[in-house]
Image 1 (cartoon, rainbow, N blue to C red):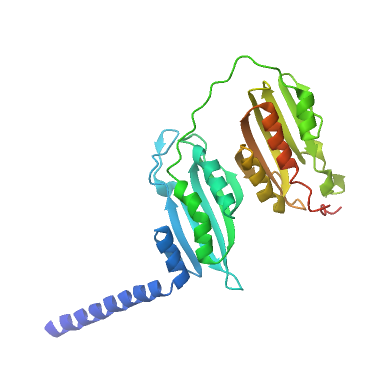
Image 2 (cartoon, rainbow, N blue to C red):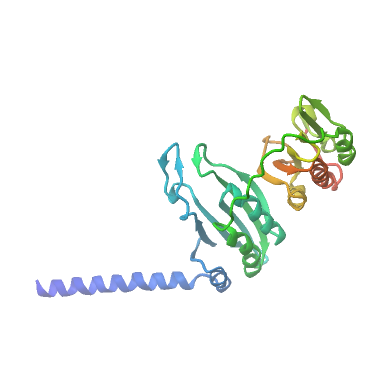
Length: 308
């Protein structure tokens, strides 16, 4: 019996040593440039199946959905992942979990540092506080990607909500002729709202031989309400994939908030991405911001639409 126990202890000890050596080997398998990324960002991560990944959990938030407490693993863990391309550079993808007041400051910080924003949406209804998900993309060397993404990550959990200015009760009515001149497009009045709609006929999109035009939803628009001194704008921009980042930069540079980035259609060729935006300020300033976004559309020439 004693010899049997000794033999069992030896086997157990050998198994533990093997497991520990496997863990050590696993840690050593992480490429050195990824280890440097973790150091520079002061984060923990792992390397599996060729993918380096670190999490950005929102442990600082206490979220409820319809009054039900929902802990971080329920769906509030952001992340960044990198993997090697054929030329040795990295492809970066990620999903950031953000409060609504964090969305646009984080977006601007990332755009200013060469990181692309590819989607912005919600995952839940009735969540308190409201949480949004921003998908990011980048390409380059791991160390450079870490440098570029860091300013945005550093803002998470540290953005204070902006003070809301009360709406003014008086002022000059909207000068719609001036707004149309700034935008370079005439609009239509509907009650208190003046709306400018611009179709993307340059895309030549068809489906089963039918022309998909502005009235079918392939358009960019801006709606104005309020006064010339204190107006609000909301709208939608229809963009080709390579127009998304320039349009986002134009909107953010001109002080408009982006509230969603997503598809409206599936199977469309060319692929069209839509973003929704909101802003408040003088009507002329808002119209100028809208025009800045319009100016980023159609620069690449005619696109190929869907086949008949």
